[in-house]
Length: 173
Ligand code: HEC
Image (cartoon, rainbow, N blue to C red):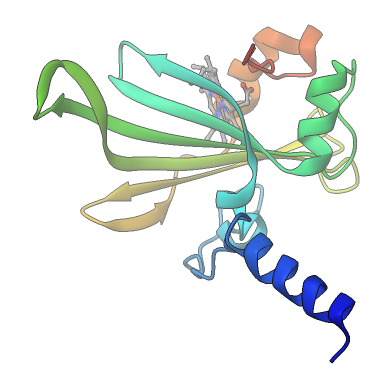
């Protein structure tokens, strides 16, 4: 084997240790009533980039907001209208005291995974062109939220000016 080939092979092997492992977990086969969006439509969301962290004091829940590449780049560019295919995912965890340091809190159990997808063809009656889906986790099992999407649409209307998103890219520097 040529020396250059060996170097390339070695480089790719070392590089492999430094990249994200693609998540192979399969999401449960669930569908959100009204929007008909499935959980599987965000398969691989664990590899999306984190956009922001929120904490709801009333729900005592820590939340990560993540976005697929289309959504992430648009948020970074601060576009007025998010492009088609943007997916914004929210993961919510309950919190517990960190055993080794009681004044610190850490994430405990996942309580929900929800998302918004920009899809004007399928969601052209909302006014916002976002589809909404929520999957709640109870006793280790996911279920589709059974109350539909009217609540999502009406509450998110409060932030119409920012394309119905509360989230903005959180500064990391
Ligand atoms: C009563 C108001 C309210 C309702 C109802 C609501 N949301 Fe939200 N949503 C918020 C707020 C406030 C945030 C930002 C804070 C946070 O992360 O919790 C948010 C954030 C989000 C985000 C992250 C993107 C963004 O806009 O910041 C997604 C995705 C999301 N909500 C999905 C949903 C879905 C799906 C439903 C319905 C099943 C829903 N929301 C219902 C208030 C609401």
